[in-house]
Amino acid sequence: MNRRFRAALGGVLLSLVLTSVASAAPTPGARSLGDPLLPLLGNGGYDVQHYDLNINYNPVTNAMTSIATITSKATQDLSEFSLDFRGLNVTSVTVGGQPAAAVARDADKLIITPATAPLNSSTFTTVVAYNGVPVEVTDPDGTKEGWIRTSDGSFVVNEPMGAMSYYPNNNHPIDKATYDMSITVPSTHTALGNGELASKVDNGNGTTTWNWHMGYPMASYLSTTTVGVFDYTMTLGPTAKGFAGNPLELHNALESTFTAAQKASANTSIAREDAITKFLSDVYGPYPFDSVGVVADRLPASLGYVLEVQTKIHFPSSSVSVNTLAHEITHQWFGNSVSLKSWSDIWLNEGWATWSQWNWTNKQNNGITPAQQFLNNYNSTSNPTRWNVATAVVPTAADIFDTFPVYTRGAMTLEALRQIIGDGAFMELARTWVTEHRFGNATTADFIALAKRIARDRSGFEASNLAKLDTFFQQWLYTPAKPTMTPTTFFQRTDVPGSVDGTVPGTLALTIGPPVKFGAFTPGVARDYTATTTANVVSTAGDAALTVTDPSTTAPGRLVNGTYSLPQALQARISPSGVFGALSGTPLALQSYTAPISNDLLTVEFKQPIAATDPLRTGDYAKTVVFTLSTTSP
Image (cartoon, rainbow, N blue to C red; front, side):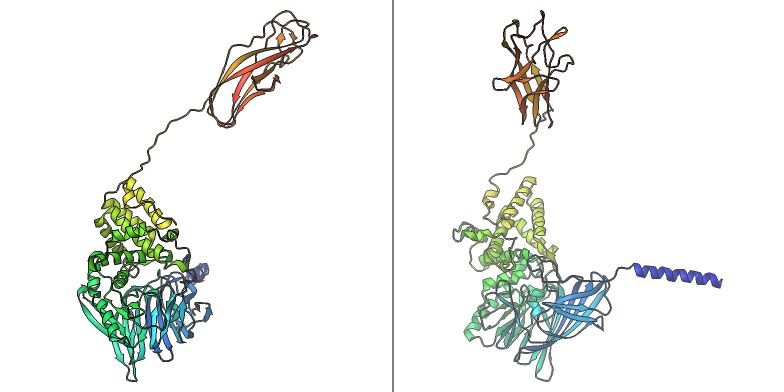
């Protein structure tokens, strides 16, 4: 019994060893997410769930000492993975509480080899300690982003790639995560993060830690840790609600050195952010976050753009345009909550925000209608080459933020669609879009599919008009030319394909006329005797050939009279242009065709040469010949 037990145990051990050997070894995660415009951004093999950033920043030296704690879920067994990170000094890395086996830098990649490989579907924590002076990032279009130095701290905006300038991350919108940000700065300064202020701690040493919490998924390019001397306020909106149903928190920060007039002007616009958010919530459905606000700072050089930082809209000057504010608050739905999967789909962010700005300005700020905006832009004859870039086919990363193709033409596409499917259906489309893809990612193909679904179900579009919508989207989104299909032309005509068909049976038809008669041959007189008949050809084949053959075995090609035959061969041709050829047992080509033909009436001429010395026997000379119509391509 003891022996049998050991044998069984040994068998189990053997099975375990074989199973272990058969398991696939962990592999490195990809160092790209394959974005066609920005292929160096993003990393594969994991999905970040949460970032916890602890940043200790000295605005005098512009230096930071920081720790990034990154919680991720592995999507494969990981022998190695990478994070996007530029410039700063890494002092330590742990994965799952263990020091990393290896840490390397390759351009903007921080490459980590864990001591123990995270297994597929497991959650693991990476802690990166780092320090140094962060530097700004230059976009492919030449603009600045990332950690932008100011006289009193930093102005942090990251679209599309600047986040890697101050913390390691998976720097692509496809990998969204929640955030906690603890930013320690001198107590004279304000530190601004995304979301809501969870706490503000006086450290008793002249520094204060600002603890911000963003509990909804966020793309890395929408994060911020702006620091400066600000007039900062937090109030509750009187009408707008946050996603959780509570009064909307309004976090606003103005550079303290703005003049009184500059602050008053900015605050006039900021005072409308609650009403703007309420208006947009009535249009698109619940505001997707629990706070919103404006950060207006003074920069050493013109930045050239405002950014829809998640819950903290960043203006690089004291000029806070209320129309621009409406545009950027719209982005909280379109771009921030519903994010793109590829940067080539940027029009889904900017087109919606621009259309929404038109709509809000018309209804709330005495602007012209979106329909008039469409007409003005469509009918403008200035700069006709502006149509040469398609909205959803951005040529290069330097073109991501081109105004006309991405913003204006994107908004025109939406306005034209609104007029085509009707206002009610269009509003349903907008609300369904932000609901079905809330806190996620979507593509242009997803949008087109939803638009057609709404057009079918809400507007009653049948197959022909749905097919016209395909043409509409092809022209407006994918064709580098001015579209010809507009709300006016869409309903001017409907082309519906109808089938009209008939069948042609395979046909090779040949009709030969009356028998050929030469008449009497005169002995002792040299002469060519001729006679004709007809051949009518009908062919449905791709090619055809008409031939004549003497199939007999007696004197092939020559007329016979009993046991006698004429000395010279019978000849034939198509008259009048053909060339006579001698008949034989081999087919003599008379006419060829390279296409179908119907009722081609030919004159077939025969010639019988008789020489003065040819012996002729009394009686009838004759021969039966065979005409053949054939093809190699039925």
